[in-house]
Length: 323
Length: 276
Ligand SMILES: Nc1ncnc2c1ncn2[C@@H]1O[C@H](COP(=O)(O)OP(=O)(O)OP(=O)(O)O)[C@@H](O)[C@H]1O
Ligand SMILES: [Mg+2]
Image (cartoon, rainbow over all chains, first blue to last red):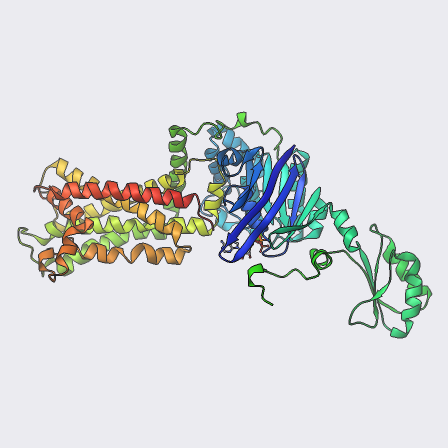
């Protein structure tokens, strides 16, 4: 069973092809990470799947209903947290939640009980009766996601839920998403962070210029681009050869000199830890003066580089391509 | 404490909107949306000030500044001629709140949120225009009180006084639908501010609201005479002063109905396509 099925979605704005034949399949109860740089078409895809936007062509079903012809049925089964928090600033947190409850036609005791429950879970009890204008960015984001959960949606759409949050709030948001997923909620989340998809998503779809360029699990993606790397800097270039020799047994692939540097080596390693202390010890033993050792995890940018041969550019307009 | 998203049976939700969206549901949604605005209104002192102070200022300024200088044949006192015109202009101006409010909701992403809920398509706009009507009633009452202090009186029947007032409110309600369409079309709050107001100045001044149109330049007279706003003012003025309101009354009612039908259709259509 699929909670989301989309095929051939196309959406064009003037000369920009925001979506260019996107296909998606999300099995019920799983978390899909929709990865892409700025302007890739993530928000456009979410807007189509949540009935806010009609595709120019292609079709999509969410929770078993067509997003164009059965939009109301879809709306009653989904929750949407958009890229920018959409709360009524002049109402309190509680009033915002009860407002959504009213729109779902919950009676007064039910919507007040649900509001209380969500206020507690999202740590908003103390500020529940203050107007949302006085909330911090993180609080707004929590209220925003709580509002999309009022009617217990079976499919939840989150458009960059952690962009702009501090590390602690981000961790809190990840816990929420994990909890929802273990409750059986299907989650579609867009992100620019590979790390986030790694932590949350059962599978990922990478999009660029409105089309899918890769899909699979995060591990599969990482394997394609070589996974984690160790980056070693030493002080004296004349020690380079012995440093290479010392690192040899610890790495899983060729040791390369970082481009533009004479003292920094890069090499793929197995994911899982323990390599850094071993590397420092080995380098010490061979007499190379170590400046710095770090593990570099692949970023979305690395994925892009290896999949497309170009870096992720902000706001790519494929129409403005000349030459 | 958990989120408890597991029992997502729709039995928990009042009715499954997928299959049954009745008129009662639609009205309930509209009432919920109107309730949001009415709850916010007293928390917004600037807007409330505008609702009360601007009309009071208009009534005072026009009556005091022009009162002595302007004479209108058939009216012993300029105030008796002027007040219905000011009332009509003020409530029609009040419709601009609809455009600005919707543009604001749009820019904050609230319209997106509302559009992702399983509510009647028209509910958000019906709720918005209704709450704006309530605010206009408030403005109207304040203006009436000030006018009475200045010596304005209903010279006709009670029915005429009530009928004239309802006519102006109904006409301004129809304008709220024009403004709803504008607010959803222009793309920013600033643009909505300009686009909602600018055209209402010629509309209300090239009319019978402040002077008799036969004193205007010849080429302007037919414009002023056929202006829907002139029809409204003439009808309300006649009802307030115990004169015969026809045929202006029928014209004013016709315009009210026509504008509502056309612009409500356009605004609701726009609402279901609009994006931030
Ligand atoms: N309303 C619009 N009018 C014109 N162009 C648009 C509109 N919405 C999106 N676009 C364009 O469509 C493309 C995809 O935009 P979209 O917002 O879906 O990207 P995104 O992946 O969500 O980006 P971001 O990470 O910046 O949020 C972009 O080139 C964008 O400029
Ligand atoms: Mg986006």
